[in-house]
Image (cartoon, rainbow, N blue to C red):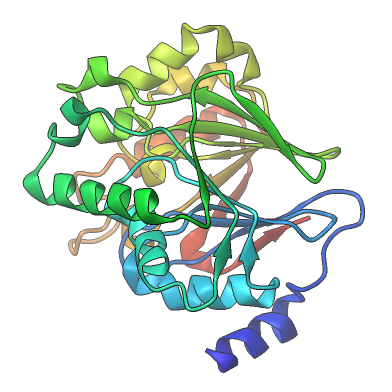
Length: 288
């Protein structure tokens, strides 16, 4: 753990932050599988985590948080798939001094919890039991239109759980979509938002909020929101929480030989004129 802290501080200066706006890191996956993890530090040193990734990534994530002071002021959860929440679950189960002030999420209904596999339901129930037992952490169930601010960084919830989509890619389509902005830049975090929920968002009063500088590509950049969604959303930079095999649609047979839709999505971005991309498999990304 100490080596992780020293490396982070020495190589990336993570204990310092911008005086004018927040710093955002897209964390690289520590295992060769899908994960989703972002860390934000405000100008005043407050720390926000988005999702966090797999349980196997908890030590790296914990080291990153410790390098920023060992306290998380807000932890935002898109949805309870294990590649998004199992690192957080492990840290809640064994905090070892880690302090989490608030956790923001959109709590699933029972219908949604049981809408996928028994394994997914068990992971979700364990996560919720840990939230319910976290007496030192305020847990906030979010809804569309909710807004909050942390040290000058503003957040708005654009989408929440969708129990009416329990028969259509239910967990992903219930991703909580969050817009974040400081005085200089803005981000939209889509989680694993699917086609149906993306269309619902486009047809909602919050479609006007789909303008940002940076957008986190839905479902790791493949089989998430459709082309119409990305065409109508206004952004200039893509954030890809994608291991190389996902980014290249290579399941062992070579570039673009798998069933994933990543290359198609990359082509959509090319057609849209997006030229700036940050891919998590290429290493740690810092955005000032």
